[in-house]
Length: 394
Length: 114
Image (cartoon, rainbow over all chains, first blue to last red):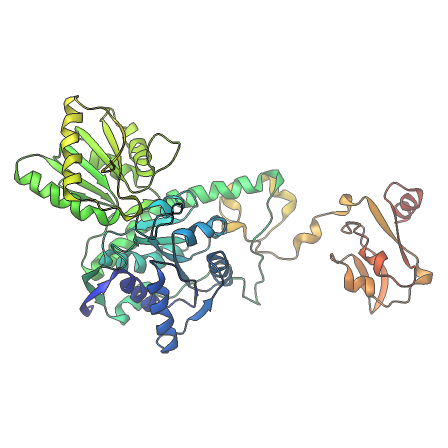
């Protein structure tokens, strides 16, 4: 039976605690706002002798991910954390980590990208990583960031998955705000995460192997990428299985999506991360007023749970898709594109509006959410068009 | 099919994508000897045994492993893998190694002899 400590904690502290409990062999670290307090807390665990981790201070995020790749290839359990420009600087290594099928767990404090310079929360950074082959969680709360981080180790290191996992939380809103959180005891978490069993570790004198192979002409590259595509798609049942196993331990539910009152909803708002609370608050008000609304939050962003999203949305009359990032030059924001792809396979065509909101940490107030739900009713009635809208800008 | 644990690259073109070890890890090291790279050469090193003092500076500097040595004595050049970079000839102090064009009569004579 798990022993639970209730504490007031920030999202970053909960991620740091999850990392401490999983106790990676190697943590490579470079500070960047608003992630810094994760690696700062972890450096204290190392200095205080609470973990055996080799803690590598590096000169940039490019080096941080490179060190993580090397350590993971060597057979170590590896973690790191970053945000925004740091994640952007890792771009080439993100593809390498996934292409080499290396288990690495990385926390990301979701933050705006320059320019202009902005240190606050949105999803511009993580959306830029959505095609890299990483499994990506987007947490709503500090508690969920803790849960996601713990299961990330098991998912990444699973023999049939072998992919890096990003466990993300919204910059400042979730990373720095204090919440009531539950911390499970170390023994329970350690028993759950276990030890990594590397498949072809670089450090093994009895069975030498080469990592980082050249695969050029002759279709070898193409074949390896085909296998990577399959690995991503095939990871869904393993993610579910591991998530459910953790749900039984921590007594909190797990699913790829979090559907609030969607079963009979006419109007559904699809959203990611920390803004969900405000959307749910407005949905509750509208339900009390007799309007059938629902909220669909997506917890697992990659691989995108198309089937579950389609099932949750299939009976709606109009859908709003809220994006905290834009995909310049495409018709919709990243979530807008994914959700509309999911809807394409439905026999009936459901009208959607895509809202870009809260870029650079701009507040998303209840009045703005009410406007979204109001516009959904107009959209369903045919008095408003589909399309992409910047919510709340003048 | 399942992932290969023993690598015989001679049949690689017939592998399906799920037979490649995850992450393209090479699980059977040392097989680069099967990959013949001598055809990359445009210039070829010629070894004059009578000038050679077996100092092995060429062996030290060769970025491949194409200087063949047995019991501390040079025995020849591995033309299957030598890429003709010319570093050995540059480093040789005794004019025991010289570079000639791959298409020259001298090169053809060596290849015919080999």
